[in-house]
Length: 318
Image (tube, rainbow, N blue to C red; front, side, top):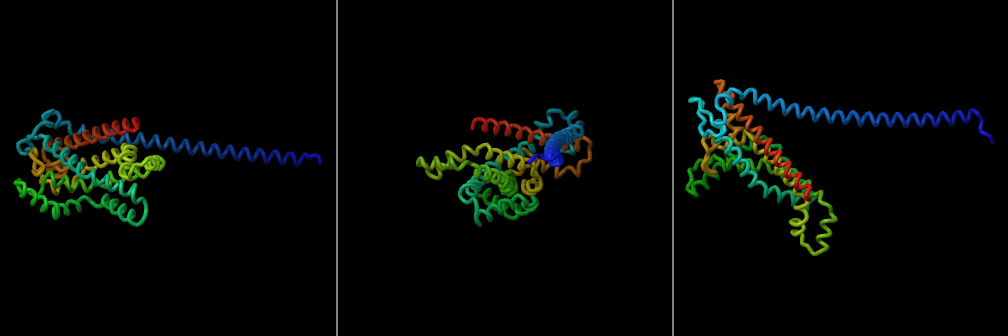
């Protein structure tokens, strides 16, 4: 039967309508993707501008101290606002020593937790309980850690100091490092657990089929494969330790001297700012505290950049 003119027109109109609807859908998809891409660009630029604004503000407000003290500010060992002598070396050393010591203490526990949850107990009630407990550690306010450190770690460290013949202060570098090590465990353990759980099953099954034991698979397959992610977690926890303020301030002893041992009281860059910023009266005094914040910003940035470079190289080698 021959197709009528009306049927042909209706068929043509339907095909045109479907093509138009498809083109509108594609244009909306492209528009949404383009808008999302622009939003990502704006967000990235905003983050860069925010970091630049923080850096510029710190530089501007620390100019009086930079002009008067110069490079001696970084190598000076004496901090005496009454005499107008400002040296930031004790706080720089205290920050690095407490953070690195806390990292050394926590890394073994973090890795053990990550392997336990990522390889042995991926699901189930045990995994849920331990994972919830670890995540809860990250949510506890630092002041609570500080009070707990005063009640628990200070007496314990004092006993250790008496046994080794050190001055029984209780508070000091070691106590602050112990508190910090507990505070940074959730960051490194959480990220390490994620990357360990993402190791392909084919690699593990191939190693087991060749006669490798479970421990050998973990040491020779899982850890090498996930090393870049594990290092990223360590880097994240180190950044957390460098900037911790309240808990460290409560247990480190707040001594403005260069620490001679891990049992000696000390101070960090964050704790000295928290202790003395509200009491700073002179222009140079206030600018010196801001310059300490600038040094802390630069140290954190350098450590993060160096860590990113190492992670990138390890990822390429893998």
